Image (cartoon, rainbow, N blue to C red; front, side, top):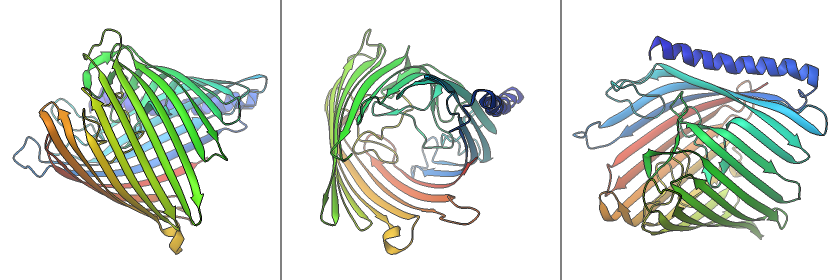
Length: 417
């Protein structure tokens, strides 16, 4: 990384720390320190992806990095209308990489193919609260069904814009927002928004509104959402979730339906798809079994903002979500919580997903499968309480893209002040 960019990264982190200090001083005067909190997440991340085809342009991607994410969230000033401040500062450091194995998205990559030595960014959001309604403006981490920020690498993706959340009626949540720029998980910069279907085609903004209602002792949820990536796509989403105790078991169901259409000047062309999924679960004594079924109908893939997570879908996995045009997929998954066997903090997961009939840029009738395994442990006591280790492995085989095997080791240590 150049000296200019290195200086920028350090300055950004310093700016965030200054924001925390300023907010604390303001809190003493205005009283919004009550309810304030500061969290620091230390994340050490090793990523290895073996493409198996070593005659290809890059047969192996392997990088190791250390990340720091500092979040400050104030309380609110007293009065009918309360004001506050949220701030975030992020910094990542390269521990091991080279031009031959870069490209894991843990770190930015220079034009010569080498990974940056370090990178970072910082931002803040002003917030206002009236009764049970909250408005935030600035650097945000949206996590709603139509736009979920991605935190799957060293540092989280962030968006710049406005979000409104209202919970004036018991059980009913109303949300709306608008975003004009995004910083990807391996970037220090803000850029225009785009869609996964065509990352090079830019949009002027993303807008959304939605409602969710929880009832039946919080066991049932119904939701309806609408979003628009301006001049690219508009999307409607409907969702029903339910959990039902049956003896020693808890049965669950998560049903979702997306309708995607092109919007405005249709900068990526015609968009026309329907995506339906069902994710069903059965849990007892630490064991949980899942069955996922999903179908994309129409001439377009499922639409989402570039860089965002696809975890709303029923068959979202470590490296894909089976969302190509026309694709049919299913998933089997098994989780075990070892707390049921007297070892709290130890979790294990294995799942397999398979898709067929996919239409991609290379043609029709594409097939793919993915097998994921993960084991994780979180320390329950001692000086390193809450330190967690996660080891996961994925095997991906696709008729329309390169095959690969992947291993990730993530050590996280959250601190609260």
